[in-house]
Length: 405
Image 1 (cartoon, rainbow, N blue to C red):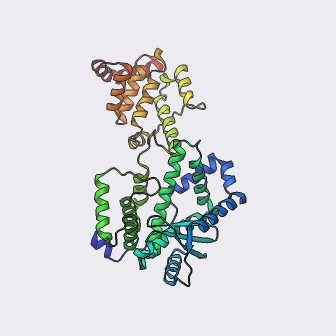
Image 2 (image 1 turned 30 degrees about the horizontal axis):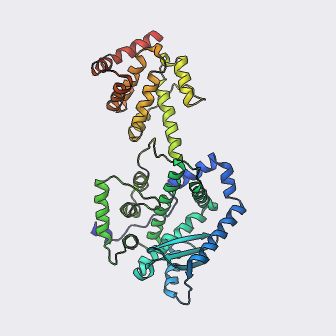
């Protein structure tokens, strides 16, 4: 790791919004068109700008260029590497832990430092911190301000007492991915991975001396051993550092690793808004697979499927990717088995044949232990009865197909 860090680095990849940013923007545009239209209005943007100006006046002391020339030179160097050409205003907050933040106004970048940030960081590390904050501006001002509009909508929604868990989770994840984007901007602005990592660790820990190589090695060790739990507004430091290394080295799986670290597998509980959509699509596909056999398409089973989706219709084409997608959705396995069992008992006139079909699908999808446990608990089926049904299931399904033909 040390040799790789100090070797001639590969070219830094171009800075671009993360897939999650685009996913959320598309969701808001498609599912909340009125709210999206409001966020784009001049009134909404003026209200936001006025609130930002008021906060700056109340909470900060302006660091002008005459008194702080080196700081302003660092800001201009960071902005230049990011390709950003707007007036930059720098401030020190009156209180708070060591940190920095961007107050966004169109055409102006306002960076606020808090705590002893300016005492602890100099040179490339300071450029990295400035680059991180200026990258927020770069993201929010790009593509007509669509990413900033999404950020404002999610923040307002999360503050509304009527918001549900999916709204809160979406706002949280959007913040996490925005921080990851800004971390990448820190690498671009400082020119390499090392100062971006040391600035990050110093800011989060308060340490005066940090080895980037040692911490990156530690981050890899943590990632290989532990489940990754993310914070409410910033990813854990080791996640950020490791994600930065993967991205800066041009790893093709950098975005996928970061998404897995921040979002985890698809889950019934704790899903964000786009996760709910993915869960809905997966549910429909499971129902389609369960109801694909003609003998299974009774009035009762179709009516039950339409309780989930009023527009439900049969799609006879095979879903070749479903098994892999079910296997990957580890947080939904109990839900999927419940769904299979629910459909299996929707029409008791079909007797145990639908249950045999559900057991066959459970085996094909790697869910047999979970499904069998649920059959025993929910249907009161003994182990002996379950074993007998498993042994006879293939023959029962063949007979059902033959009878239907």
